Image 1 (cartoon, rainbow, N blue to C red):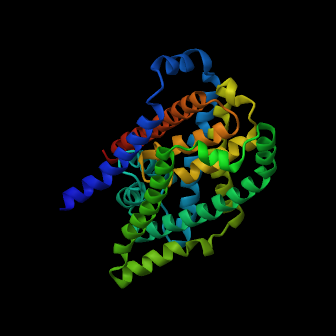
Image 2 (cartoon, one colour):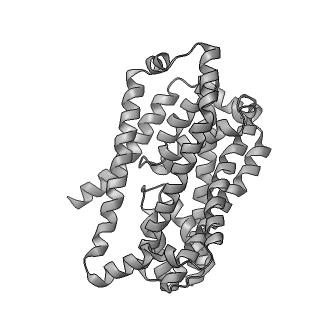
Image 3 (spheres, rainbow, N blue to C red):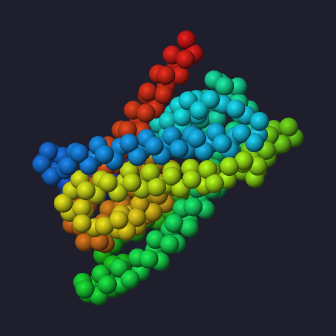
Length: 324
């Protein structure tokens, strides 16, 4: 029974991601993808975007170590960085397992209290949610005139946009929303078992409330802003890889970035499928041709996912050598 449940938790998100990707790319010829990679894409801009993906995770590790400090835990920064790298890489295999895995890494290699770690991870997520909600509100508030101008020039109305969605499109959107809700519920249940004793509950509370006792709140704010700025630049610089996205501008990239961030909440490996669908929809809204938008999201997501996997492999090897 437990084996079947574990298989379902792993296999269902993967199957859903594969299903969306098949539906999106069923009409794409692989010659088009090869042409985009060989002749249309600027690899220089793609390479320039990659360090910001690494920087975002390093800043996350530095912020996490700062949150752990008021709880009395002093893990090494290198261990925190390896733990974050591994957490993102592991989530490519089993969605949302990384939050628990990185706490296990700190416990194993630096003797950090596991329950306090979990509390600080939850605190981190709360801070990130507040930041992304604020960013989302400001983004869409500033883009309302852009959308209105676009609709006026093209004669497109909200009704025609909705009518352009096929039944499959509506079903995919609804399924993404349901899976995102399921992911949040499973994540909440995952943390519930830590409250079975008073001592563990106290440690968990210490981690949750550690942000109140941070000694350098401005540094914490700088880390938080730096994380999301790095994520944004990691994405935005890829716009310059292709002629059809290079002129869209930073605000269009910000809209796609915010929408993609919410799409990643769907518990699929690194948001595969849901992220492609969401970002492609935004690019089409800004006038990018359907096939070009589909190729853009496929190439960008694949290369950025490969970066996450490589960082995880490197950290796994580094920790194995440390143990020996």
